[in-house]
Image (cartoon, rainbow, N blue to C red; front, side, top):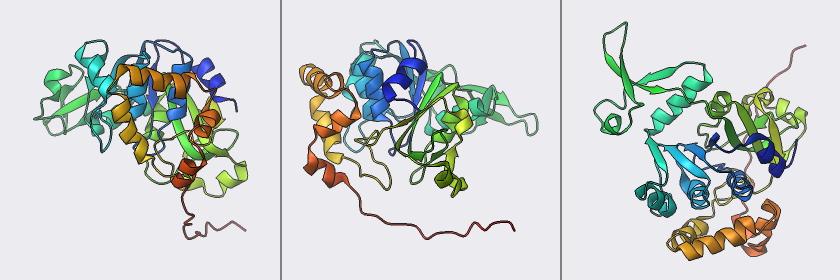
Length: 298
């Protein structure tokens, strides 16, 4: 267990390949902001859906390259810093399908050099990405597309809860968190709360990330804001709309980074600036699942 500042300082180095996991849900914004605050640079940012966090990290000058499968402000429009830097050729791009990105992580997690798939055949992606190749199946003779293994230097995963050893429970929408953790060389877990190992052991099938993979575990409530955490808080849709306005102007964007990233010491101060009314609006009502009987051996 350590602070987020300590985890980023120890485990993220300039030039690293970094994967901030989570699909619409459990996006580790707090970790991205800490990477910005510490001035990490020349990073290869990998993510199936770059979302706002990579737009902010690109705007702050952290990125050298973005490896992705879709980029946008979900439900709103463009990632403006992403597009601006890409068009100016200030960042490199490497694009895959969603399945292609997950397949790359799966190959990395299982120590395979590549992964075969059908979905690139017939598309224009191979013409724009030389890392997408083909192989002839030794059993059927079919030509299949392949994507190379992805082994990030660091994966950051946000979870609802974890114990002090990093065994992490995740529920709700599950993205590529498990594959990213097994593929990465180092893993940072941020979570809404640290719980006892007995709580984790009480529901073993919900342990998506086992502690033996984890290098740092950080208790960081609201670490996924403005995305959401099932059972804890809702998606801050107003912020996604606000970012579209903020990111139109370089002056407004710099002012936002100065106030909300560089101008705060961490997530607690960041959330305090939103005020109680907005925070309470994002709180969710409790709705518990029906307990299951795991049984015990006599």
